[in-house]
Length: 445
Ligand code: MV4
Image 1 (spheres, rainbow, N blue to C red):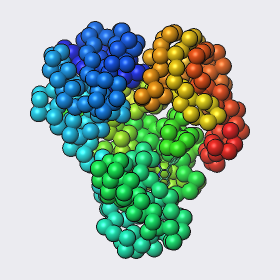
Image 2 (image 1 turned 45 degrees about the vertical axis):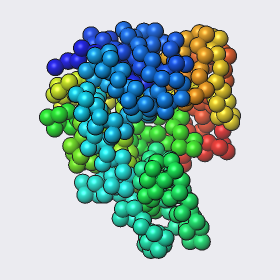
Image 3 (image 1 turned 90 degrees about the vertical axis):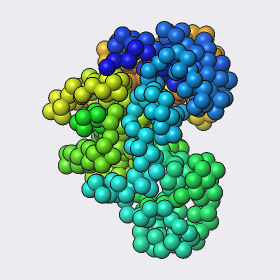
């Protein structure tokens, strides 16, 4: 069954991305938008649009009642949540199911299981994926924190079970700091995520962040689409992603893919998902979490495999079996994505404003995912991502050269962007070497 109409409950470049998949599939698309996004590019290009509330995300893109009503009012049979906002909200997925609206993503059960990062760790361990030594589940009290800490040693990292993606994490380097850090982490987790559950893991120094893209259909077929290295992060915000992951031993690469499929299998995963690992200098890898959504960096995988992941999500949600088996997936070449944010390139301070000129890069092996238009006023209320520039080339060296060329021809006037930061990073010898050590962002660049 293919949907007649899909409501896109998101904004910016990902709303445009989902819209593009819908149009190619002959599916009508309704873009839900907040007041300030009423004149944005996705809204202009949509078949229909509907205002779901004022600018504040809590009153619009996170407003479950408003999004569900918008789907009902526009006769949308399905909702694509994009990333962020409601994309990993199990309660929202439950309500969609209760209202007979297809949630384009995994089941509420899979979202809920993986949303509890302590439970996800246990599931991964049972599935046979290597996990980092740490607590068995959330820490009940300070005493248990101390005994778990004695078992793994310092430095260790406290993590909020309802956090993820770096949110609600705190590194503890010595015993004396543990009690205070534990209570602070619990309080912050309760305030930020509504759950004070905190678990701990041995802190893996100098680790790369490598994640595996998986795709599963409702018949239980699951494949992986290779891995992405997302180690270039600043305060848990990814800045640049690439595939294949540079400088990991072949056995590690294969191990990552197998472990990712085992974790996905453990929760009967359907739709697109990403299993995150840490990889250390020796090539040991450890499960850290699973993201149950399409991710910002999905184009890196699309460029290598030629597969449209959003199209696959829609087909899977419509009950179609996967059109690929694992042996059909043959990643070719090397891809890099640079996230272009409206931020100061030295301080990363957000710099919203009106774009007075926008000339995106082009040429062979260059893709631009952006909702920018000349004259577009970048709102200050949402995140600062304004464009993703993705390049594909035969190998990493050529991909780096191509990215430098693409960035240098990109024109954005009216706001500061992180383009100069990326140009410096791509010239940094540590980055160009790939592998270890990982470029130190605050200092070196
Ligand atoms: C870690 C870690 C070191 N040790 N866990 C968690 C969310 C994910 N996005 C990165 N996270 C980390 N978890 C343990 N036990 C370090 C990170 C980490 C990181 C890892 C590799 C490269 C860049 C990173 C940036 C922030 C956090």
